[in-house]
Image (cartoon, rainbow, N blue to C red):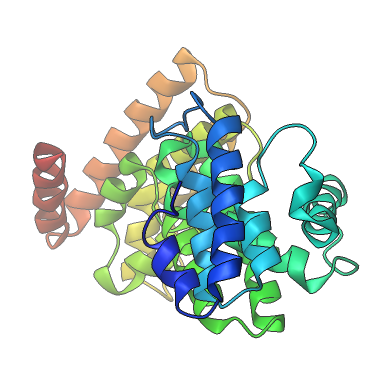
Length: 290
């Protein structure tokens, strides 16, 4: 069984024919042990180890490292014919998963870990939102610096871009309500809130945080447009109270109070600032488009 493209093209560019045949044997074994398995995307599971091996081959990894990429998710014992170096890489990856000790892991194991995470981030849209945020936050905190340390700048940049893209994507209700903010401040606040949401451990707490921010948005918008005035306003104070209240637990009474407060705060804001009428039209149009 020949290697699929682009893996075949990548390894043939720098490995001798004997090593390519060795990798074909690893590919056959991986195809057998993953037969019938599917990823969350519905794709055959084999597409993942092949993609990981292709990433490693793109970095001109050794034959054994590319082989470990093909076999890194294979269940059970790996046949001895693939050699002690491959077995050591796979055992090292398992220890790394168990201990999260990046400092003591060999470079080959770290390369394998980075390639595995890169392909998982490329297909992360198939995970539920909570897992996407956890994986992305972990990537930015630990794996991007690791890629820099291992002198893999291209891989580090892609990891950073993919993970940041997940965390910078705020919930729809927050993105739409943030249209009330001045355009110059909008992206900065959304990025900060997305990072904060990523640290919250439960769906209920994240929902409370988002609902509270939505309620506080008119007051925050009013304050930003009147920076330096003493009246950070009753609107902002009420919004902050609502945010705190909702963040402790979302219930139907709390949701009703939140919606009512948002309506009152928006009415006060629009009455005091004629320019906000345009933002209201943007808000309504955004909801219609979605």
